[in-house]
Image (cartoon, rainbow, N blue to C red; front, side, top):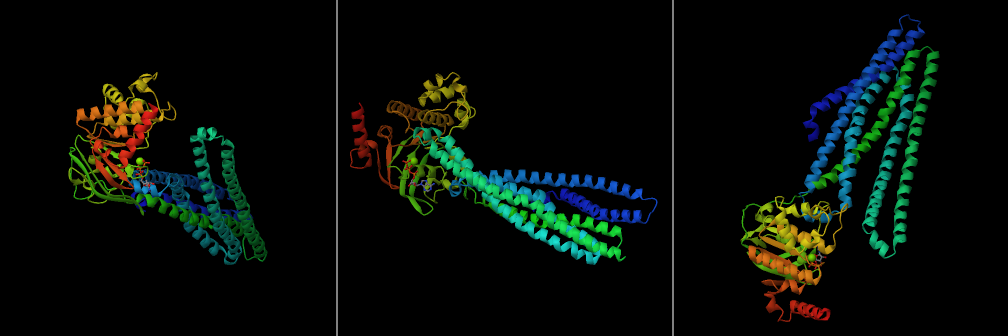
Length: 569
Ligand SMILES: Nc1ncnc2c1ncn2[C@@H]1O[C@H](COP(=O)(O)OP(=O)(O)OP(=O)(O)O)[C@@H](O)[C@H]1O
Ligand SMILES: [Mg+2]
């Protein structure tokens, strides 16, 4: 509605043109009738009727073009704006929101639902206005011309309306089914293509074909149903219109013979039936278009009106340097699922901190809470003594570089990927970071070096190379705190040891703080303090050298991995 208000003049002009077209349309049959009457009365100057008719038709064509152009253009503008708005709002929703919707669902909202709304703005609106203007004026004209014939004409046409409502409802149901199956079809194709190597390695290609075949067959089946119904539409409406015309001509000719009706009036009448046919269909189309657009608008509003990530809760405090990060008595759940309980942690400027713990103990969750990728409860996470919820997100995140557990690199050159967190980095700085990350050698061996394209259309990096790229990228961002979530898991022990040593030297030299989530005792040993998370609580913490002397988790890890080291050595 707000959109219509903003562009009110376009809509007024379009509406004016539409009314003009409809007025001409309603007038044309009358001229035709007069023409016939003039011919039957053997008047001399009959050609002028033809000229007027021609002039009006040309005029109508131009106006019709103009209003269609305006309305369709407005629909496109609306679609463009709404898409932009939905997308930008989607970027502002908190991560928790994204867990509630799967990607396929959001995709379909951003494509199918926006499409349904545009369709309504484009054609649905025209149909409904047309019904009112053209439908009502045609009916008035018909009633003025002859009341008795009116009923013969209109009763069969009501059949058209009923059929159209029924038709669009079913077409919509089928259409949704088709869209859904098409969604799963694309999803399957995507899944198979990404995992094609795994499928081949397990020799499961034929299974994949079987699954694909069944989705493909569903798609065919639902489309066929739609086609069957769609093919029926033209003939059925034609049938009703035919019955209506036949009845009017039949009764009309009897009236004509009785001298109660002129031939011209009958000709006008038959023409009005043709005119009325469209509004009778348009009621059905317009209403179902409206319903669909309404349902789609609700789905779009789910995104637009969703609570947004709050950049900073009031009162807002600014931080410009990092002194201290503290976690006090932190509890956290995903919905009903408790993940963290009574967690404590402290990181001072320049300290190296390790976080260890079994799989699924909440380590990644904890790291995400520290920089509000997930929203921590009030008074649990503090930077420089200020609750992180009261620090502008931008400032908070400019203090910490976060290397998440699952790494994403863009389909760009190595250089552009590395410069992602620091667009002004020089090649010299890039090579320095690559050295620390133990990746310089690998990049030097590439024929195009830093200019090598990686990703889908370029070079595929190994898991370990990806992790080192992500670390180099993080180092370049050059923020006071570096947080690595299990970032060495794909490295061999030799590279890992070198990398840990480089990182420790780098951090000590530049007075950086490091938070290191790891399962590897070799990465945890050089830290100042290790916190062990067991089922979501910090059960043990302290300098690693002390922890491995006790009987806890870290000591256990130490025994296993040192033993393993012996075996391997
Ligand atoms: N988005 C989520 N929604 C619901 N539960 C989640 C979500 N993410 C993680 N969990 C659950 O929270 C628990 C802790 O997960 P988390 O990823 O923090 O563990 P982790 O210690 O990092 O494990 P790993 O060592 O495997 O990386 C797990 O039980 C996991 O299933
Ligand atoms: Mg994890």
